[in-house]
Length: 534
Image (cartoon, rainbow, N blue to C red; front, side, top):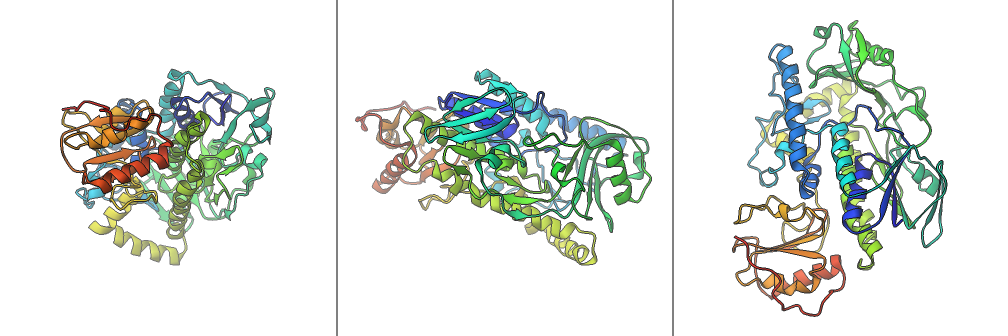
């Protein structure tokens, strides 16, 4: 086996799929015998939705969002025609999110901002809860023929230099590479001896969907008190509580959604009800839990390295933080998209020197930012007087057009970028919506993975110069427009772009091709590679 992925959550599923598309033989080991029913992330950001779009999965995500919005609309109607969040519209295509429980007003956001306006094609596929996302990705993995071995726990590992010998409860496994996507309490990270520095927890949170006997006692949206904070909605029966009285007493068992480590203590109906009563100041009664409730903290840590030898980490195995702002799932999917094609290139034998090193270099800064983004929200959510005063200041800022737009851009992920050579503003960013003259979009041409080169020169200059890399690059010709050329990596990051057709542009393209796709595979750079479209 070329690669063994540990963990069948969204991160592991995405990574395995990307590896398979690159031609690697891959398998998934999952400790849980059945998919988790735990309540987790409720939506995707733009890069995650665009990752689904790049692989042809956007229509399925859009169907999930339609069903999700119907459930939210039903809840809003039963709550007296007032949507959760203080009378703001139920989340739709212009999903805003929240900062520290302060829901951002979509009417304040400048949706014409260039960063936001460039990424609207996936608006209909962002409200996809993690459980439904896992089902969607499981189907994708099955269609690719990737085996998922459930009920198998990793107990030991040895990096032999030319591979990894993995001890499991089902027997030894020999693999070329091992990737831990097994959650915040990652067995792979622990067995590989990778440090996990960061800041310890100071709160306990609960998330559940429950049957509530007297829901009228609860206010819609986020509510603060000296005891903590809670949120009711936006789905029927969904409750979140936060208490700033320290981490759970059974801290080793605190992250119930973790996929690694020992079996975890369950969160009971009484646990959730007791917490909700404390923070709400009511005697609200929960009669049943729907699905598995979760308990979590604001533990914020980042692995000292995302890779040691032939052992790599992605998702929560590489970084953990509180769920405020909904960044965790999205950060992990971004890891998987970034790592998948690079590790696949190494397995295939064509990777340029140092390509795999760029995984840690590119993803670590974003992971560090997410940790601080969540820490900042904890700072304004505490129940003490100083935090309450700070929350009022932040609320004022978020109530302005500039403040709301800034926060939405950060939460949505449209400003994420990688530090790459080149001075074109698109380089290092996720490729924007690029529509072609034939009615298609650039992303429609990349469902099978690989690099995409958009050539808008009148005579196909860029496609001809890149034809020596035709085994790894798909060429898309379009009518003359700006930008005149764009090279997109398999993870959606723009590796090169130009608004001109001069020698400098051609030289820059060839440098980017060498940097990311290795040596040319043919010696005929001048042959005509494609016919124009449109």
